[in-house]
Length: 397
Image (cartoon, helix red, strand yellow):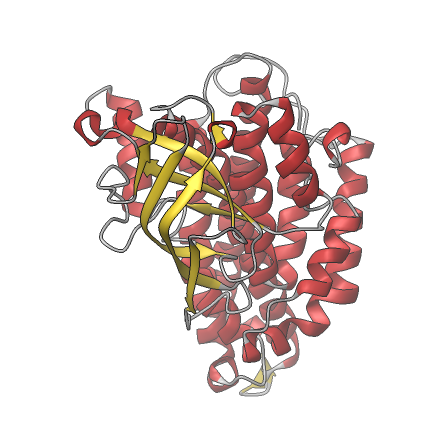
């Protein structure tokens, strides 16, 4: 897959490396042996799967692209996609936690942080000893991240006093460290946003109630609030005023993670449906023999393969970007849009084919359906992805 070069006329190599297959195998083993058997319990109770997350961390899966010197596996973006698909196929909530730690937390610090910040914050997360979170969204602002009310006011000693709220923070109830975005100069709009590294155990930091959600219920989500929280100059990520640029860069990587998650959910629903249509009989034959069912199966397979190839392309482009190549925003948006809408369609069709059994909690199909929906919403809604793609293609803003 490393040779996938869109629009360049080069050879295309669809083979994965031994290292990529190795991390996929590790992820698959943990997913099948530990995550899948506990998925129903965690979905039903909403209990955060801390033991499983620790296991993933011990095996390098909480810092897949993090270099070994910072406690990670030192793998590439394609390895991350392969691992995420396996984890998401077992349980989407686990993959959400993995995605935030890898894409939104570690990625930004590796790209924009100091050596000290990488050692302090990235190592603990990559090794699975702590949980990280990403705090951008606010109660009044979703897709419009620049409508930010959380403020960080610089003090005479160079520190910042932070006040405000953030909402829908994945892993918020359990995270130790947060990448926080706050307004340091409201007059500058997007250029007045600064990124900070925040400790959730420090005075002035408050966690709200855990949100009851439709899906990914084991990935704890809450509101967080800052009341005169003091951040030191060494806890600024990047430069003052560069927060919006950091957030957008990190979200590009995050979209690859969510595309991978959507593929995993879709694959799980597809595989369960294949098994069901072979065994379930109606009118004297397996329902998989009916042409209408076969048409759905064919469309499912095509959508999964298309989503996977587009996501691998985006991951490859991310790797090229890290070597000094072009940005991958458009490829990431295309992958995320295609994969998330494929997951929603496939889980919908899977539930329809299963009929009443699909609607019952006795089978995981209804969980796949509930989990799939969020992939069209977070890391940028489908509407935002279409704007990103259209603006890139037309050159119009």
